[in-house]
Image (cartoon, rainbow, N blue to C red; front, side, top):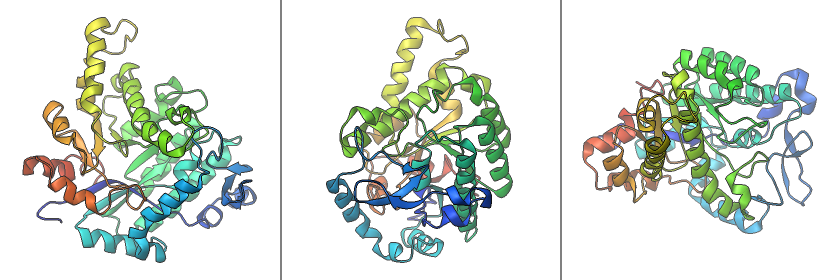
Length: 371
């Protein structure tokens, strides 16, 4: 507890040791497991299927020295935890020091691995299982406080469904997908309907989270630096994912599907609902027959959006949309995250205590199964 508030950080990250991809993968795939190799630019990095897991050149690349130097500086605040390999014990110590009751954990390297289409989806499914098994084991150090979102290999929707069922049985708190189109499919594609139905039945949230420099289509690829691509990719991909799930009838077909957007800020939310409402007023569901209610009604029945504590637009979000639809995240321990200042920043916002209580805990804790 922090200053009288219970706190759930709905977006924190694992910093996966490279060994997990070989140690935890099905032995059938051991010879093709992701591993550190020469990325072809003089820098070692994680490789899968013979290529770096993130784009190193062209648009939205991750090759610049300036970017890596900035990231290194950003990690200095995590020096002690990094020295301990970002172990569960180190994480829990950091959480205790800053009054964090629970975290929802997403992959770092694993998220980048989901940013390519993969020649062999069975190998990708094995990679997801390896990460998920390691992460759920990591979280067993404090299962009521460390809640993992399981990677799903949506490149093969049938395999993603199998993994969702497997990880539900193991105690996953939610299911992680990227917002980008994959193999020519947007999130509203009919191939995903069995997966969304099953996740709906399991009463676990669908957690949408972008990750940097993918091979998949991304708004970031309009830019030729990682920083400029990252500025636009995370919020724009989240906005389009939300719109497509609403307008193409996914929420109409799956009315109990909970969707949580993380690491994309929340300041865009009033504008985006306004934009969708304007089009509803203009054309209704003329091209979208499954849109049977106003867009904002679908949003308010099924979505949460995570904010940073330092967003100057947060009071407007609470005023215009409502404080019942916002959660809190820090991106711990990524270098561009707000840990540990994000909590103090939220508490300084010109918001009533009840709003902060909802954002910190009440809105998200039931969705992620935290008591």
